[in-house]
Image (cartoon, rainbow, N blue to C red; front, side, top):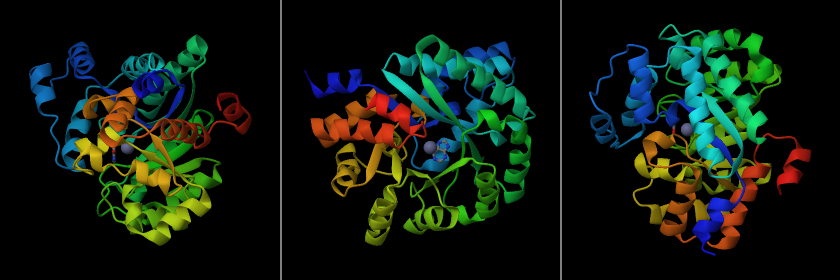
Length: 326
Ligand code: HPA
Ligand code: ZN
């Protein structure tokens, strides 16, 4: 059996996935038409041709454009269900997905419309396939602390459906400490906390996420490898890194898959996991990310299993549930 086949059939978790980043061009055009919204690109081909990014911001510009056709609860349901069907077919058994409420509120789409559509799809996936999930509300870091607090207010009636909060969008110039008080409020409400850090931003942002915010997990974390003391701190705390290989390649965080640091992370004893981030934009879902690592970095069978195991241990499912998957 090849490693690729093994990667495909092993039970997997996905811990770093933006639901708006699963918007495939075909579905985007279909929903745009249904909602009578005009897209900037006239064909699926023209849109796909634009998916060439030199950095995070290049991608984010298209990502916010793409999500702008999402207006109604059914749109959020359809988007989420299409993703869940896809990863169910890839033997993903548990997902922890981000949504970006501020990316929709700013266009007049109410919080309840967004979360109801996403939540119903997550529930249906559990009923149909036993696929379990967590929902993570992510704050857009290029917006203000005040805007994040307003979003948290809107979320309060839905806290039973929200497991944690995250921090995403343009990293450089928007350090975690900008949201220190928001995350304090979230923790008081019993929410788990994670943050994108060290994707483009410096190791200092990872330090801030750990020491000031007190994150339960780190999204990306690539640039933590530049700081030996930081590596020790992440290890000592047993923090999981949600690494996204194809994302790193497409956003030029790494210049070649052969240079991807995930093997090194494992060797250093870090709890690295494999995730797809924004699969519709970055060229692949979970199994494609594993395949890219197998072909590009030559991870071996033990490393493959370690990555999958880290995904279960780093998830926010109950310890008793983790045991069932290990
Ligand atoms: N980084 C930051 N913000 C994001 C990303 C990402 O990879 N995907 C969606 N929003
Ligand atoms: Zn991300």
